Image (cartoon, rainbow over all chains, first blue to last red; front, side, top):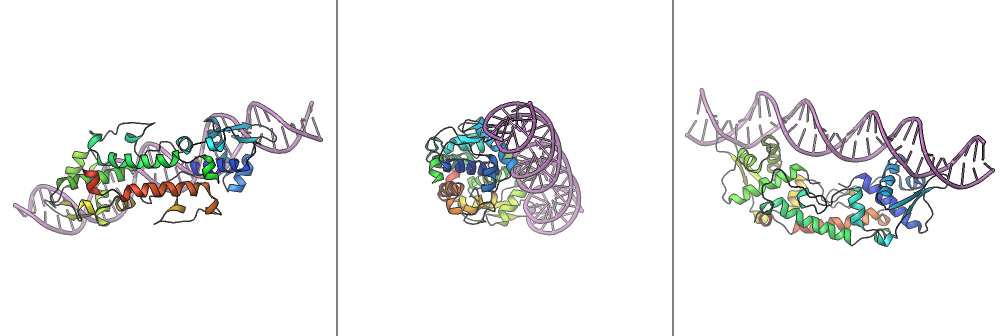
Length: 136
Length: 136
DNA sequence: TGCAATCTCTATTAAATCGATAGGAATAAT
DNA sequence: ATTATTCCTATCGATTTAATAGAGATTGCA
């Protein structure tokens, strides 16, 4: 299951992207319109800022804004930051590879074989979707 | 991430399938060879039996055996039993649909749009793989 | 200058889930 | 009978998730 963190993060990015301009959007506004706990959303937006998707402005009339154009924000990158590895098992992860300790031979592992296919097909979806695509 | 339950369940099914004959295979043998906690595996095989993938024989020389041919066991079915819904959000689940309570309109929801694609591509992988395929 | 609005940061908590374990009951083979 | 096995229920510890609390820092504006 997708975590609420990821779900809310995507919704917030979409919300900001749909505004179109570069004015800072406030947490409170997003939280209210997307029915998200404001405090929880705070921490998510902080993560998105620290990983380079959002910029922020403090103080009155502050808020968050997109640093890049929606068409340049790939779902692969967003998902990796919010949800973590795209692969369902670490032994097929491209960016977070780790050997399974219970599995002596990946080549003969049926789970490995299946999960490589799932990884590739999911990756393909994320590579072909930008923030602009899903915000339409 | 794939749960260990699913991972172990798939490994156990594969182990039994690779034996080729219809002799009951004992939990202990599978646990030992696949490096799985025997007690944990017990509960997993029980689940697989109750959902119609395995048959069992009690007592001495008992064990588990496949009820259908590996080529007739679809990954879609196995995954749904072991891991649950294939969709990452319930609002795009075919078999376990549930409306998101925070989302007033699915048609305009960016998460919905993205997750439908993920669901379809994952489903496609599972539909095209049987136990026979992954056991090769 | 001071107040109000806003993001920043750390810490905490409640609930849920996961992986594993324990122990006995039932059943079958010898 | 004895032994080997599955069956069933209950429980536990660790981890993760979602949410909350509260104080701090910064900015705009009157």
